[in-house]
Image (cartoon, rainbow, N blue to C red; front, side, top):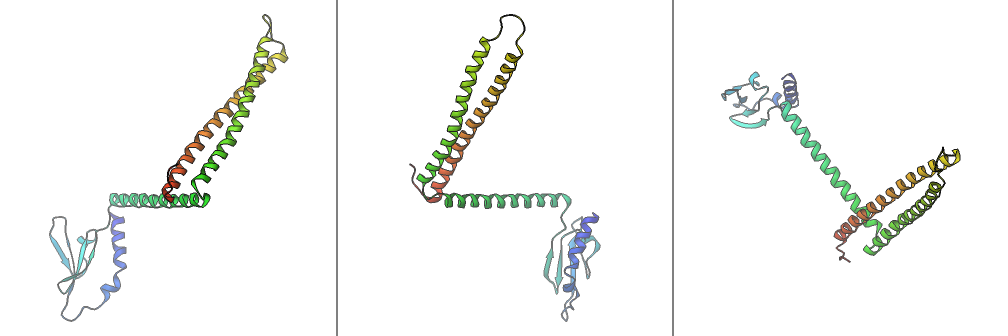
Amino acid sequence: MRLMRALFLLSLLTVLPVHGQANAPGQTRSFCCNDAQGRRTCGDSLPQVCFDRAYAEILGGRVVREVEAPLTAEQRAKKDAELRAQRDRIAKEAEARRRDQVLLDSYASVSELDRRRDRDIGNVEGELKAARAREADLLVQQAKLDKSRPAKGSFPKTLAENISINTSELEAIRSVIAAKQREIDQLRARFEADRNRYMVLTGASVR
C-alpha cells in the first residue's frame, strides 16, 4: 500500500504545473472519485480516499483529465510479464528477419544452395568413411589379439596392454562415427529448412 501511494503521489507531482494554474473566472476546479462503497467523493484538492483510486479532474463542470488508479502488485507483475513477452516476440521477429537476409545474401539460386549442401555433407561423409575404415582396422586387430589370448594361465603384460589400447581406440572411433552421423543428419535438416525458406522468400519453384 505504501508503494502504491508513493507511486500515486509521484504521478501527481508531474502535473503540479497544471494544478497551479489559476482557474478561469467563474470556474471551479475539483477532483472526484468513487470510494470503496461506490459513493462519489469530491474536493477542491484530491481527497485522501482518492489517493489509491482512479479519479477525474473537473473544471467548470467539465472533465478535463482522468487519472487511472495505481497498479496493484499483481497488476504490475502481469504488466511486466506482458512487456517481457512483447520484447521477446520483437527480438525473435528481428532475429528471423536477420536470418532471412543472411540466407538471401548467401545464395543466388536454389541450385547454389543445393551445391553448398552437397559439398558440406560430402565433406563430413568423407570423414565418416575414414572413421569407419579405422574402425574396421581396429576390429581386425582385435580379432588377432583375441587369437593370441592364452588358453590357460595369465596374460602376457604386453598382450594385455595391447588389448586395452585397442578397446579404448574402438570406443573412441565409435564415438567419432556417431558424432559424424549426427552432424550429417543436422546438416540435412538445416539445409532442408533453409531451402524451403529460400523458396518462400524468392518465390522459386520446387525442384
